[in-house]
Image (cartoon, rainbow, N blue to C red; front, side, top):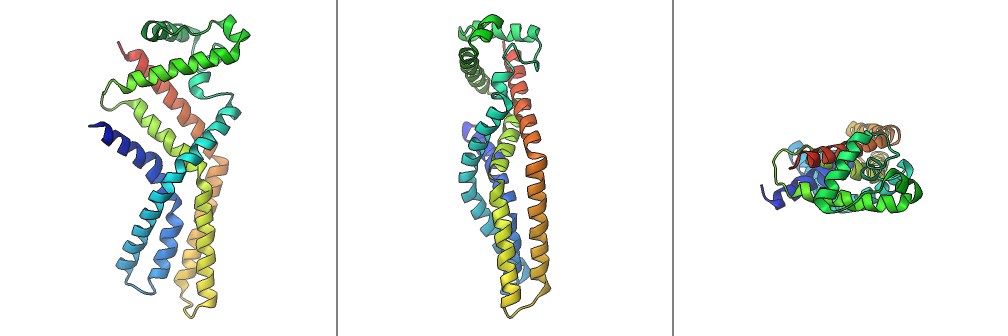
Length: 241
């Protein structure tokens, strides 16, 4: 598998799929309207094609929304998981494991992470050294070219949650727009077909589920996937000779 294939896999899972999920209201709305002019197969295929094209365009915006959300979450969480996990003050990893990691980092990259006393006295400097070390760790494991790496799966999972939650409002906007269009066609058009009201109902349910998930469960899943990614990166690094 070449580097292009890996990029494509990440793009699909972390950007294209979230874009498709957020564009479901487009599929519902255009599909319902298209049945007035085409047979069901043509209507479904046409609405699917338009939704895919729109989702690809939306995917270009997803990363920006995801990065903005990521920075807000890092501030709220007290730092990026990759930084927090290697602080002496953090409890996610034992001190014994941190000693092993520190020694390996010093051996591999000639980077000396701060001691407990230095971290307590200069926390920002300690974080900067940790960030430099984690960047080196990430590049080292990316260069191993091993198949089936768990850290890659967790990276794509985190990318999905980050980009989806950073741009979920687009799905809500498309849902509300679809509802408005369908109701306008039903009440002001000549066709009073029940399918328009059914499509309205589906869009309403979609908007409720999307909003409920994003507001109630989204941050929890995002934080869990971010921490899983960091754990898998660390384990992958420690397994390297």
